[in-house]
Image 1 (cartoon, rainbow, N blue to C red):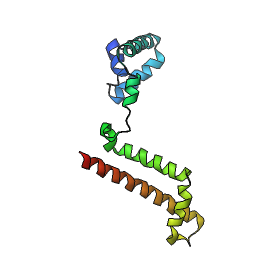
Image 2: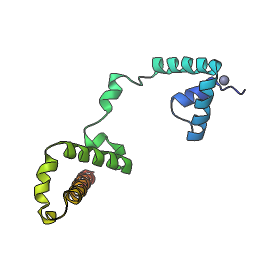
Image 3: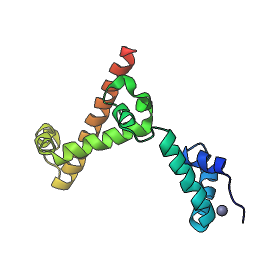
Image 4: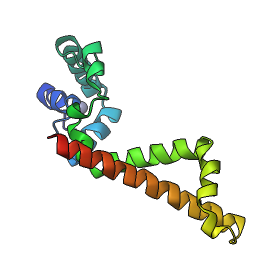
Amino acid sequence: MNHYTQEEWLAYIQDELSEDRRTILEDHLYSCDQCLHVYLEQLNYVSDTLPMLSEEEQNVVPIETKKMPFYQHSIFHYTVAAAITFLLLTSGMFHSMIGFASNIEESTVQNREEAVSKNVMNKALSFLELIERKHKEEK
Ligand SMILES: [Zn+2]
């Protein structure tokens, strides 16, 4: 069995490996006590020397738009859109929005709800586009 070096485990912990490599090391970790020991040692070393999960780090998780470089990523948009949709669906807004969708009043309840869901999703997406535009203008 091929074992891995301290440096490799360190790179694994610090997420510096390619996805393939990471999977290989992970698999090895499950089946090798010796490397698990090295890995835990490195993990200890890292958490002692780097403020990885300190309060400082947690405070950086931003509400302020200026500290959000990941803001432009589409996955982020999707997550926010899903979150907004979820909030709208669980709040009373979902029901009040049925009032806005009066032009589809004659369709079946099921169709109406589907259309309202799309409406909510569209609103969430245009809301995102709006803040993105504002964000770009601020630059
Ligand atoms: Zn090993």
